Image (tube, rainbow, N blue to C red; front, side, top):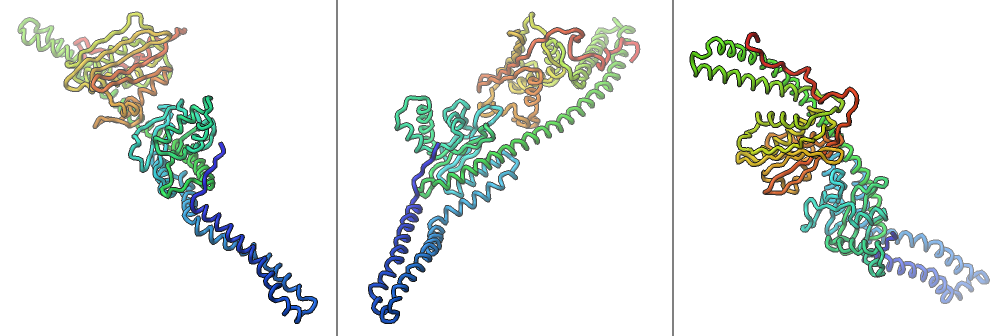
Amino acid sequence: MTTVFSDPLNMTRLRISKVVLFLGLYAVVLIVPTTLVLFGSEWLQRNFAAFWWFFPLILFAVLTIAAPILYLGILRRLEGRFMKDQRRYHKTLITASSGMTRIKEIQRLCRLIVHMVNKTVGLTNASLFLFEPKDQRYVLKATRHRSHAQTGMAIEQTDPLVELLRADKDLLVVEELQAEMDVKRADDRAKKAAWVASWMGKQEAKLILPSFSNDQLLAFLVLGAKRSGEPYTTDDIALFSGLANQAALAIENAMFFEELRTNEAYMVQSEKLASLGQLASGMAHEIHNPLTIISGEAQLYLERFKGQSDEADHVLKSIIEECQRAADITRRILRFAKPAPSELVAVDLKLIMEETLTLAGYQVRMEKVERKVDISPALPKVRGNHNQLQEVFLNLVLNACQAMGQEGGKLMISAVPEDSGVVLRVADTGPGIPLHIQRKVFDPFYTTKPTGTGLGLFVSQRIIKAHGGTIELASEEGKGTCFTIRLPNWQETVGVAANGAPAASEAPPVGNGRSP
């Protein structure tokens, strides 16, 4: 796309001054020697005889040589006077753009770019849209002097604006788009140009500046008019093109460091969780030993004094039952805390869900939660890791129960075969998740809970992806939330274990009552 801009007022004044200066110097070069010939020829002839014409010729030659030098000197002064503000912000933008690559926080970088361009050039408004890989769209990250701009405003990849930027790989100017509309073509390009020109009009935009990394459109700046009323010049466009390239490099650099920080924090948190798992395993073993003694002694006394007192029999049976219940908890903790094997095997989702509901019952008040579990009897085994999938489902069940709160509600769990996989849904009748939060629930360290870590859903999503599956969220405020997980079926192979949670490290059952 070829960009043509009208000259601003200062450029017009400069051009007029150039013409006047040129004509003035040209007049001096011609008039001064001519005047010498007309009014001084008699004096020159009396004093220099036949060589009198040599002096006007010398004067003409000197003026001809001096005029261009004088013209350039005066022109520099004029340009410095008329273009002082433009050169100032050009220099400021060049200096600032060179420091963008040192900023490693993406949100701060976006705000800096918008603030720098808006303040330095003096624009009515400026906005920056950045590509979000997670959402696969361009999200408004920073804006300035635009009261009608919506926070979180997003533009899809299929939008005509994005398609034109990718096709042209150049800036878009509203005047040029309107000129394409005036041609009244009926092709796809004209339709897109009309749509983009209309959108720019609503946003009070005059110019859209894209930032590419190779063929990937990373971001684009939406620039309004200059507050001075002057249109953009070709010098402005050349400067903005360089700024866009520098911004693309800075954004790519900031994205890399952000991902690095996320991975580093995730690794640190994973180490903490691993340490907690080892601690839980040790505590489970320590708790199991006294439970075995208590249960054994209770069984011994029940056999010895059975029938002598109904109340004593009831108390002893309660002790034995609670010991068995506590032992069951320790076994489940050991299974959950045990390091997960790297290979994926055939796992039984029904078994995992039963264990998950039992574990969840120890951590939240389930008596006010109406549970509805619908697992297809023809449910095939899936390819996965028992412990990791249990971690995912436990997290979803706990989130659902905590969302419903003290008032309780319905917890609906279903699992059905679908094509070559299994679809599992965990739904609740809680308050739902607002739309602006739904886009962030899978982000690391994002949480609305006072004591939450913000890693539950992030880790769950990573686990499901590692299993070759997907996890999706559907929520409506006031009606509830539903998480849908799709996992591939297990394809039987020789030597595959029945599930991914071997019992080698589980605690043994509570003793038979004779010895601890």
